[in-house]
Image 1 (tube, helix red, strand yellow):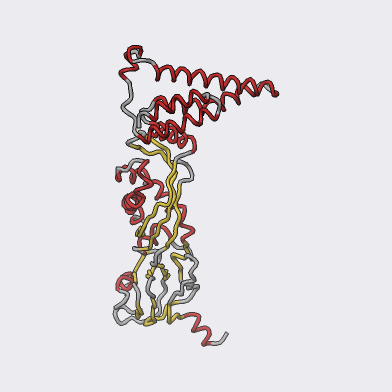
Image 2 (cartoon, rainbow, N blue to C red):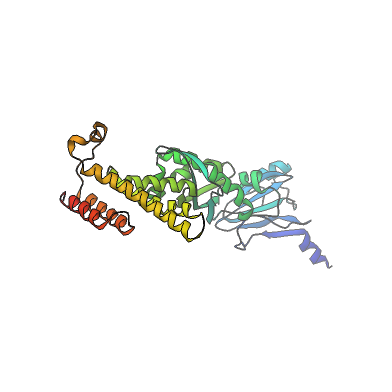
Length: 347
């Protein structure tokens, strides 16, 4: 090795970092046994910051620009090294570069349902998924709290920690927003804002700034979704108890026939179907007699619970349900025609 090669190896004149675009958040300049030339230049590009670390202690932080490395531009390091203002020898320090651009399209989601309080259901376990974006805002804090002395630290290395912080504050966000679960789908933007506000301090504690949060979907576990669907169905039926009973009968018949029919063979299937139809007809006839009974024969509890006049939409919906019962063989043609005529008079 020649003398010039030896000198070049020992003294570094220019320190800079060209990001490779692979999600690197922090990168340590490869110093080996080299020393930085006093008066050399440090180039920090836009969306970068640089940190000088001397003997494990953060000495100076540099923002974008070209910096001459002298006692004037390294005041903290100068103090630590006890340099005289005229001292101009090479020095040894670790230099870390940090990317301060936004790390976008980071995914967060609930691997398991998260239990939250809800003003409609009391408590629900929901799943939620979305994106978020962040950037390094305080490289000194990020270095001391997260990246440390590693040669490089990537967004992938940090992903699990940040995802946990997002999920940790979902309950806080729902409570702060005051949005019921049933309204979350229509208020995704507001929920995302509350989640960002609840999570941002945890990001700041490790030198990051949470720039944005989005909510893409929110849902219940399958077993709770079935209960919700039942409640929605009851809400659609409303106070029309006759239509609700017919609807329940139509829904129960296939299950009853299937259960009885599991006895085996064609005879068992026929028996199951016959039992289901017989039960459905009995319920429909009882319901019909109740609807046709004169006012003086209606019991007090039934009269007290009488439903208000049906709207045109409710009449048509009931006729459609009756038609389904007729098609299943639960109502005869005459019974269907009689009920239909009675309902049409209400229009």
